[in-house]
Image (cartoon, rainbow, N blue to C red; front, side, top):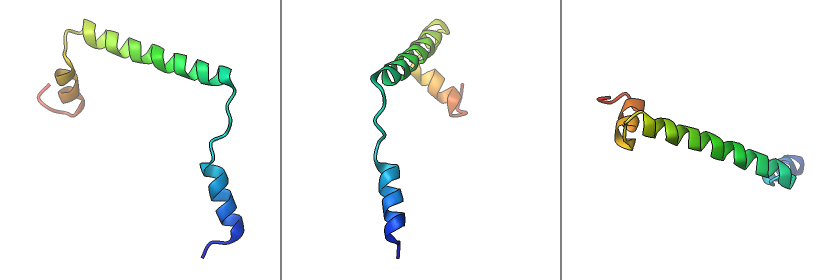
Length: 61
């Protein structure tokens, strides 16, 4: 049986911390940039999604 303190710590851990808007914007911009870089690399390598997926899964690529 969990004590009241344990329950409080779990609920505090599950509650999202309020983040500054600038922090969220920077994180999203970084994510977007890395996604764009990945997609560009895929496109310029001449592979489709299937080939990249198969290679990543250790398939026939």
